[in-house]
Image (cartoon, rainbow, N blue to C red; front, side):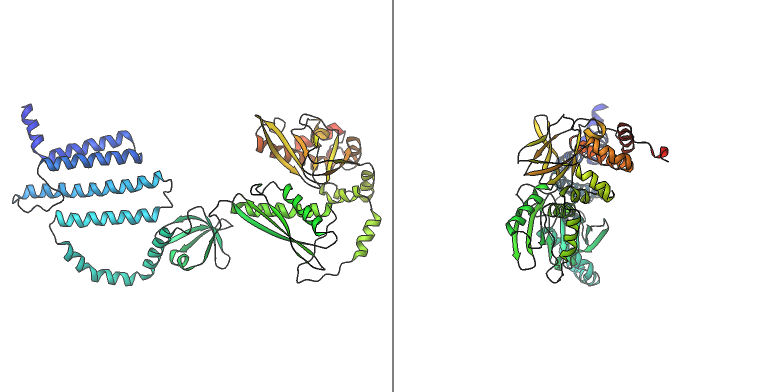
Length: 507
């Protein structure tokens, strides 16, 4: 009896096919939906199905017209149809798996759909010819007229489709690239499909553009051939200093920036001069187009601070004529000729003080100079004075795991030393002069005298110190002092250390 059942299984292709389907489904359920495993299972199923058909003298790639038994013809036709569908599934799985290995599943979506469509179309025509024994040529000729009518009705859609195919083959952009179109519109490509390309603009809105529009438009790819993006800024200064001196100041501005790339090195060049202004062009690169806006904002702030620290004045645009009133400037200089007073005036933290308070604080400030490469303060030391950058650039650097990590750069108007003065804590990094540096010092005692009259300075200094410690923690992830520190907590500690009453205790 057992041998009879085995003989029935070996002689019945339909029963063998059923067993093969059940085994394949069971294997796919057990092994999961991994694309690679599914591809291997599909190949094995197709190979075993081919062997089964050939063992029963069933040629799936040729029409079978010699069998007059209806049940056998139906079974044979069904198995041939499954064979052609299985072949198409194997090829489609190979296409999808190739795109996954290339790590570009979204970028190659249109090409993938096109290839898959050709595969299924070929499998359908082969199935018609070899299973139903119909003349494919006649069918194609008959459908030609219908295709013409359909093409005229879908002319706009087909224009987008074929434009999408041309863009996908030419690859002027890819998913993730920033592009600029005619008229100044710019956005980042997030998806391409048969009909359109999806962009995200600067305000994070989704913009859908037909492929036919992009195929005709002149566009600039800001991401290629390199991921980094170049930026240029032109600044005009009054010719109160020599062009070389102004150019050197702008090089210091580029050295101060923490947002631009140091390789390739940025440049500052004199590009024009007349009786009204000296023009300087700053050229630099950032990590990507999305970082250009933040880098330009930082550069503009640094240009203003360094220009003010070095006595440079911005000039009006070319097409604007401005009569400069030197009398008011000279009057201001006569009234407050001291550099310490002007330095306090330029810092928002002290700008709200009265003139008498600024005079008193300025008269107690001490000037220090440091040569390029000098270590101004060392990591672990405690400062008893608040240090204010007057001119030059300094870097905050810390040694971590045998490597020097740069935490920040200090420019004119920046403060440091507040950690030791305000909360009696050690410095978290070395402060090294990158250029010739001039610093003014405010002692703890002089600062305390001002803070007792202006208790609100405690909150502002607490916020400043908390923000700096958060930045250091973000860069190094190793700042024990900044962990969990809140500005209100720092302000309370500062008040207690300096003997400043709480706001509720003030009359």
